[in-house]
Each structure stands twice: as C-alpha cells, then as structure tokens.
Image 1 (cartoon, helix red, strand yellow):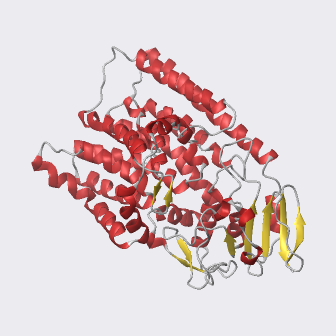
Image 2 (cartoon, rainbow, N blue to C red):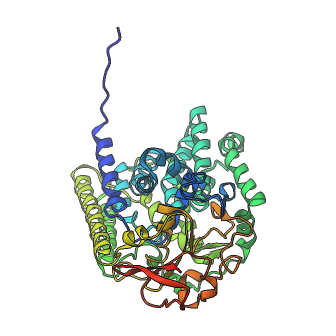
Length: 497
C-alpha cells in the first residue's frame, strides 16, 4: 500500500504568500475604502450575479451586455466567488487578488527572466496607486495577469513546449478579457521578445497567441466599445510635454492629501538605488530573453506622453500608463548577493510594510471621520426602487479625487433596482438599460451629470425616482414632490410623496 506523503510549501513560498496577505490589507481593513469607482463595480457584480433574482428586480430595466465589454473576466470570476462568499466578500476577494497577486505574479516574471525573485517586494509599495484609488478595479485586476502572461511568454519563447504553449494561450486570452490596457502592455512585451531575427521560429512563436489575436479582431470588428476605441485611436490628443511631465506622479503614486505617500516613494527610490549600487560587481544571471524587456518600460513612458486622455468612451487613457511603467521597471533593478542582499531585502520589506500600514491608517481615518452613516441611509430605503444620488459633498480631506461620487451605487449593490448616476447607458458597460427604460430625460445622461448635481432639474427627478439620496447641502424638493424620510450623519434620504 503506497505511503501518503505530505508536501509542505517551501519557506520562500510561505514568505511570499505572507507578503501577499499583507499587501491585500487595504481591501479588507475597512467596509468602505476610499476608491472612487468601487461602488460602481460592486453594483455591477450584483447585477451580473443576481440578474435573474426577483429580489433585486434587474430584468425589468436592464439587459446584460457582457459580450461587448473588454473586461468581463473581473465580473465572471467575482460572480463565481459570490456563490461561496456572497457578492460583498467576493468583491473584497477580487481586490485582494490584485493587491496580493501583483507581487506574486511579478515574482513569476522575475524567475522566468532568471532575476532575483526578491525584487518582487518592490511592488508592494506601488500596488496602492492612483488607478486603484480611482477604483479602476478591472484595469488593476489585469496587472497580475499581465505579469503571468509575460512570464508564460518568456518561458515559451526561451524553451518552447506544448504545455508552455497551452498555458500561454490560456493566460493571454484571460488577460484580454480582464482588461485591454494591461493586455496591450503584454502585447508590447511579447512583440519585443518575439524571435524576429529567426524566421524559422515565427510560426511556432505565433501559434500560442493566435486565439487571443482572434479575440482582438472580434472586439475591434464586432463590439461597440472596440469599434469606438479603434476609431478614436488616431485622434487622441496628447497633453503638452511640460504638463504631462509634471503630472507623472500625480497619475501614479500621489494618493493622500498629506505627504506620507511621497515619503514612501522617496524611500522606495533610495532603496532601489542602494540595491543597484550594492549589486555592482555581482554576476548577473539574467537570461537573454529578458534583454529587450526594457523596451516595454520605454513604450509605457512614450505612450503616456504621446496619447490623449480619452479613447472613445474611456476616460483616463494616457494617464493609465505611469502605473504599469513603474511596476514593469522593477525587473530592470538588481538585488545584491550575500549579506548585502539580506540588507537590501530587509530595507525594501520595511518600506513595503510601512507603506501598507500608512495606507491602512488613512483608510481607517476615512471610514471613521468622513464616510458617515451611509449604511443607515440605505437601510431606510425599500428594495427594488429607483434612487437618484445627488452628491454635493464629493471630496475628502484624506485622499485626493472624489471618493463619494458614486455612493448611490451601494444601494443597487445591496437592494437592487435602479441607481443614478450609472454607466448603464455606455456601450462598454456589462449591463445596459433596455430600450425605453432610460431614466429622464429618456436618453443617456448629459456629460458630467454626476459631477454637477446642482444642474439637475426636478423634472429629471420627480416622479421617476422613488428616493433621492443626498450628501451635503443643495437639494430642496418643491412642495408635493419629496419629503425627508431619514437624516443621519452626512446623508439624507428624501422619499417621494
């Protein structure tokens, strides 16, 4: 009878898993992290997961549009997790997959390049970045998949095998349906690693990525968002060079209104510089396949400076490249050997722990001092209703940007119905309004509707919406329309008469 042997993870694997758990703390440290678009994505996950559930009433006003979006994987994986965890905790899990998965996936790329895997620790202070704070969760979810795809591509091109080719094909398709931006960065990486100087290897190198190239053609030719993006690509207007240069860190690491995030960026840069210096004279075991990788970082920088801020319906186009530029630059660093390497490892681990603790402290302060009783406001409204969110007080004294802009979506995430403002009128969104079911004025909302609640006339609100969720001062319902049903810390619920 064969003996059962238990295989325990290697100590290094345990260490990096512990680092991943630490890096994921901002996702679960508070109930309401200050991520601008988070409520949108939570509500979208609810609609997709519970579309046919009569308790939420989605089928009357919406239809699913998941075949016309380029980041459906985020919601499909989240929906699967929701069967086990529920929608709220599944969404936390999705954020953890990004925060903790990025250093783990980067470790795989470093190993594929023959680089020191400890360099992956440099990613920990960078995972909470401006794109994450904006709440562009499908976009950042694609970043660890991007590194996995790069690692798969490097391993396959370095030593092609059938299993490696299959894995490359699977992970590249998954990346495309995660988000088109990190997929584009992977495309650049695969192109620069491609064996252009050896024509006999072209077919073998191209076969594993043929399925994902077919997906790209399908998206550009047949999806509304793909056709719009392809049509606008050539007309993107770049920012002036001086303005783009001065805003590079504003679009990558400038998160908090105080100077704590800048401090950790400086410390990160100093540790990287010291690590490079201490590694001088050490033998570099990098594989040749990693040599052209520097062009990936160069491409991200060039695209940031050369592209505009819109592509079709997608806002923040060029501004999405500084974050992958910084993360992709990590494999270009070097880690010293011996005790010098131990010193560098302790230093970068200290910076990573400090940055995560600093982020958690700010998130906790935001939850305690600024969120207010949003849960009480949602509890005061009946399920499956139509709710208009007028957010006059959008900003925060703790984080940059406007974390309360889309808080009305928390109602839709918990109780269903219709919430306004919504992206459900945009061609790239995973669910859309049925024809004839658009809120007043019966068509997609005017540009920047959610930013200018003071410009919303009562004729667009009454009598369509059952409730008006208000933060701040600025809404006074005309007699006979709405009355205050509930008032709490920072939030007011008006109910239709």
